[in-house]
Length: 113
Image (cartoon, rainbow, N blue to C red; front, side, top):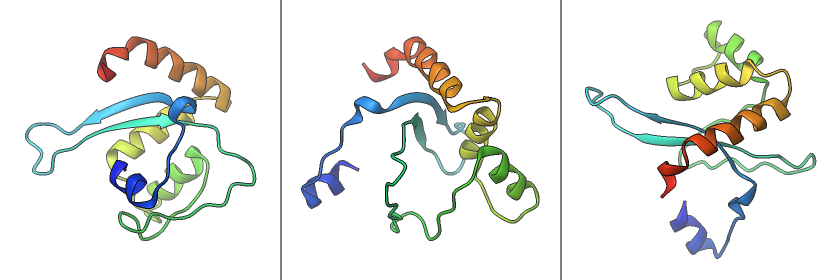
């Protein structure tokens, strides 16, 4: 991400990001990665551009809608994203998710030191 920002002379303000979780593949996995998930507020009229270096298609939906489509085999969702969608589907409001995110951030602050 940093390389793209430098190349395009862009910056972002990460102060609005709320830590939501981390997923590390098991040591036995042939493909290893360590990824972190964040929540942020999305401006209502924001225009979306798909980052085509990693994605070929993007769709929007509620966690419940996306899980339902995945279960019907209409879309594929990899386990880390599926796991976070399941977590998000348990909240009644987005504010509940942000409140939980703040609790997770406080407990896992050491991850960023």
